[in-house]
Length: 396
Image (cartoon, rainbow, N blue to C red; front, side):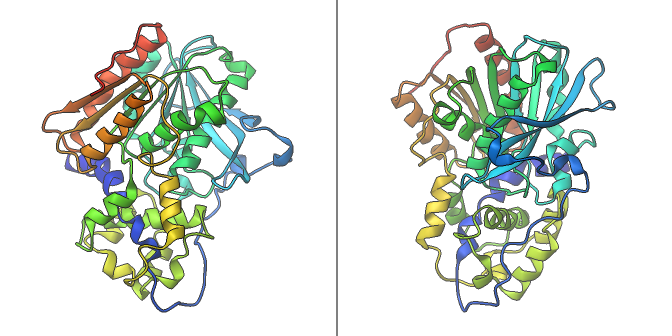
C-alpha cells in the first residue's frame, strides 16, 4: 500500500522543481537536451507525409489480441498531432471498446511520470504499469469505449501539458475517424488525475479553438497541479524523497522546449550524471536515483527569473493560461493534498466566472494519494453528462 501511495504522489512533487531547471551559473560545454532511446517497435515511427495529413488523421492501426479486458476489442491507432511549437508529430492512442459504436467515449489520461518510451500507456496498459486501468472494467460494463493516449508524446516530454492536451484531442479525433470502431458520432468525456489531469485540463481548455468539432459533454479531473512554477517555489532547496520526479520534469521540458530551457549552463557534475542516468527511466527508477536530493545538488543557483523559462512555464500552467474550461466540469481535491488546494480552487473560480458549471468536491483529510477515491464520483458525473442531465454546480 505504501508503494502504491508513493506512486500516486509522484506528479504533485514531480513538477514542483521544474522552475529551477534553468538556474544558470558558469556555462558548461553544451550537450543539449537528452532524448530517450527510440522505441524498438516500428509502429511508433512517423510514417508517410505528416505535413500532408491533418491533426487526428489515422496513420496506422493494429489490433491488440492479448489484453486484460475479456470481451473487449483493443486497437492501437497512430495519428498525426503537433508538438508545443506546432511541428507535426506522430502520436499513439489505445482504444478499448466493448463493441462497435455508437456508444459514449471516455478519453482517460493516466499520470505518466517517466522519461523512457517503454513507460508510455500504450505499453504500460499491458504490463500493470497503468494502475488506474483497474477501474476500466467498470467503464466497459457501462458500455463505454475508452481511449488512452500516450500524452507525453514521441519524446516522453514529461511536464509539457499543453502538448498533452493537443495529443489528447487529436487522439479523440483519430478514434472518431477510425471507421471499424463505429464511434464517429460518440459523445466524449475527458478524465484524468494528477499529471493526467494536467493533460485533461488543457485538452478541455484548448478544445474550443483547437478541436471545436468534438462533442465534449463533460470533464472530470482530480488533484490538478495548476501551476508547476509555484510548486517549485514552495519546495525550495529542501532534500525530498521524490526529488527525482522534479528533475525528470526539467529533463522532459528541455526536450519539448530546447530553445527556451537549456540545462547545460545550470547543471552541477551530479546534475549532468543524473540527466544521463534517468533519460530512459520509468517512475520507480527515477524516484530511486533522485531520492533525498535537492535543487542544490543538481543546479547552480542563479537565473530562476529567466523570462524564457517563466513564459514556458506559464504556457503549461492552467492557472494562468488565457484559455478556460467551458465544458461542464467535475473537480475533486484532497483537503491535505500536497498539490495546493487553494490554487486549484482559484483556477476553478476563473471557470465559474466565465459561466462554466463547476462541481468542486473537497475530500476531507485526503492527501494526493488517498484523494484518488474521488474517481468513483467522477464516473457517475460523466454518466449523467452522457445521459443529457443538467450539470450540477457549487461555484462560490
